[in-house]
Image (tube, rainbow, N blue to C red; front, side):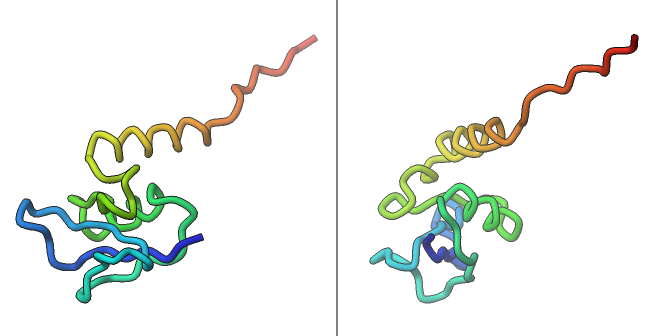
Length: 91
C-alpha cells in the first residue's frame, strides 16, 4: 500500500495530479488522499475534491491520461460485479 497525495494547485491545463508519497515530483502544496493499493482508488478519491484529476506520469502512469484512467476505473468496476442471480425455481 502506498500513501497518495493530490496537488492542490492545478497544472497549467487545469488538472490536479495524483502522486505517490515516494514520487520525486510530489508537490509541497498537497492534500493527503490516504493509503491505497493502486492509483485508481487514489484517483477516485481525488476526483471527489477535484473532478479534473489524473495520475502523475512518473509515479501513477496507469492513471495518467484521462482515457487510461477511465479504462482502469471501468475495469475495476467490472471486476466488482458478481455473478447474476437466477430467479428461484418454483415447483
